Length: 457
Ligand code: UDP
Image (cartoon, rainbow, N blue to C red; front, side, top):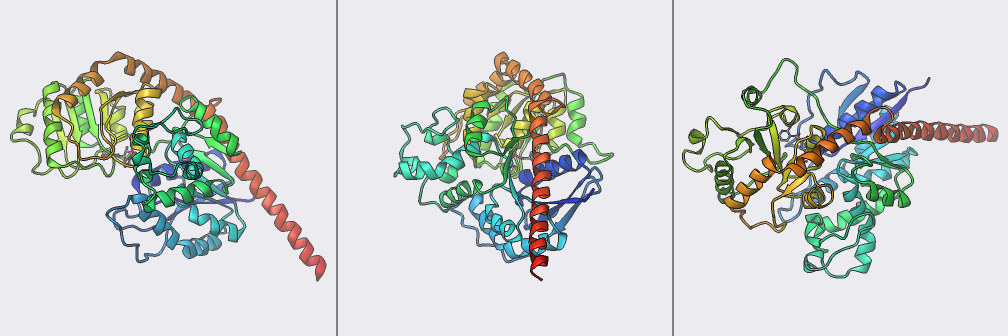
């Protein structure tokens, strides 16, 4: 059977990249007719990850040339920078897809400018949303909200906003990027939201049982929507076990609270001190992972807590940590990969959202899904959360049974979803079929065209 070449273009951000590689890997395992290339946009902060031995051998990585990147604007969010960066790559992406004879393009949801390239080449585009269906619903509905609501969302603090498929949402929970119409990020979200409708299909890293109403509502506007999650990147380095895992081995079951805030989570010194105070007062064992902590911890904190906890100032293999029997709770920034990973291993969460769509995720986790203990965090930032609140939150996380019960349910539901016969498995099969069919149709169309041209000779 003829090979089908899939081209994947993630944005250069760890969570987005790893998730897309994992999705590509699954497609390759599922159907040997596929081969895949990941086009990597070089980025100073994010070198091409070294290919892992667990990658299938029909998956390759192709690095695009280095280009002068856009000037980052400190007042804008990362979504602006990355949307501009991706746009610069259009000619290079076109060249690479042509050289690789790509049949199908799969792009990150901040890379919709590349739909133009696929259109020029006459190949279909699928969009991969590494976040959830709620995020997709907000972005898709933004063009309509933009016409209906003339004020900035940040000026509507008291009102609630209706997004189809979601409960009424406070503007304070919407992604920071759309807080004000004056922000470039607002314009980019509008742009991407409009372009989603041009895609052949949209793939989302979620599962129906979690976001049922949202997915049902989305499917009224988008025919081909594929909820195939959880997609988790579980790649392990061979013959290597991180130091912190050895410490976890010595701790009792479900006794440790794990605090970790994604690839970009940073706090000021005052907040770090309150956090340390809160953790210490809770009396719980802890594994606290945070870059840039040097010189910020209260005097003697590490010595005093040597028995009870570990502070790690570099990243740790989060998936392995969450899978460890000693971990009983996760204080998270609510990045979507982290949420999916925590549900997968049945670890209850305390929500400490920081950026992007994390405030919306936190709100859903606490109010809708019951999988998170709430910590009140202002999206506008600048408010230091006191140690007493952190202490209470951590105690509640480690002792509150409702959230734990609900998370254990979700653990079993999400595992069933991706197994044979489950909802995400069925959706995944639908995706594979669609990718195959679209190619077959395209081939026959190309064939027809050739025939006509031959007839004219
Ligand atoms: N991660 C990790 N170790 C760390 C911090 C993060 O392995 O110390 C991984 C985590 O498991 C997740 C990803 O990095 O897969 C972070 O993605 P997420 O969507 O949660 O947050 P982002 O970094 O995109 O804000």
